Image 1 (tube, helix red, strand yellow):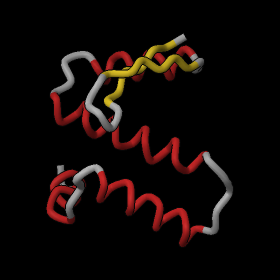
Image 2 (tube, rainbow, N blue to C red; image 1 turned 90 degrees about the horizontal axis):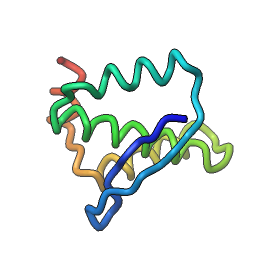
Image 3 (cartoon, one colour; image 1 turned 90 degrees about the vertical axis):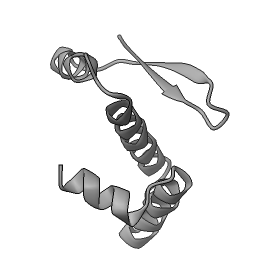
Length: 87
């Protein structure tokens, strides 16, 4: 089992345990070793987007709207998005 920690809306850390394939666990553990705070925040954002997409099957336009809402609520601006894309 792999344990992920992420911030909830009240900025407290919550621990989440998920079962993943060994190579997935290895890749995640290596990615988190020495990760900066920005890297950790990006991972948290990606996990939130992924989790939101699992809620139900939605038409693509509704899914994109949901992802946009999550991104905006997380403080992602067009400038920040461009900076992430251009890294």
